[in-house]
Length: 73
Image 1 (cartoon, rainbow, N blue to C red):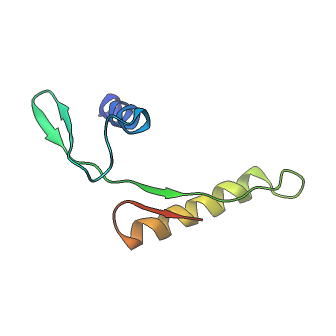
Image 2: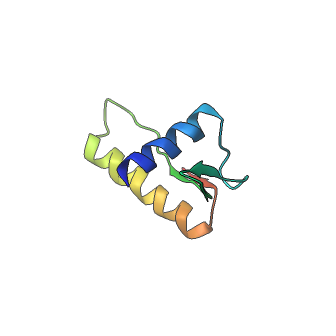
């Protein structure tokens, strides 16, 4: 399963696969994809890595709750 996730991620990043627009052919099966992204601004002088990851994680789960193909900051 890990290799499949890596292949899907590479296809999305390369532009060969747009989330929600068709699918990715894997061993004769079409796999549809969606994406949820959580990002956070980071001030290296005041934000710890743990705080930054926590804020990005919270944003990710807000994006997931909103439905497919969402980005939250």
